[in-house]
Image (cartoon, rainbow, N blue to C red):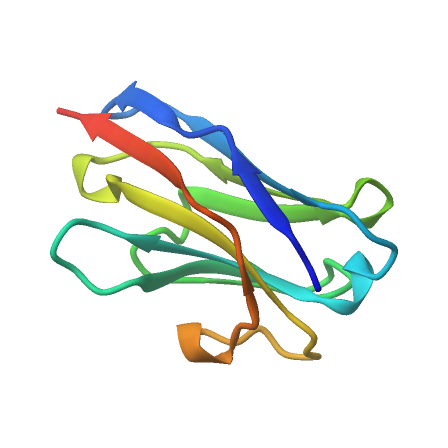
Length: 124
């Protein structure tokens, strides 16, 4: 069982930055690919970014490429999502998720473990 805890959400003006963090306990963190998804009111949950087990590979949704950066520190069991140049359309609940996989899945159904989510609100 992997328990994920997100932090770092909040309210920010358009053009601002936030950094989300996802932490977990346990000694097997490096076995899991980690993804960030988001869900806005009335919309489906969508893939935002993912990082491979080692941190050597990353993948981003087109909508955040060039603005968001995902990285991990396996020694600290932490994955971070640095979000710059935020837009009102980035407003959503952001979820950290994990799967024991060599790939970085982009489908929510492929992930096994989910955090509770953290709210990000970008005002115009």
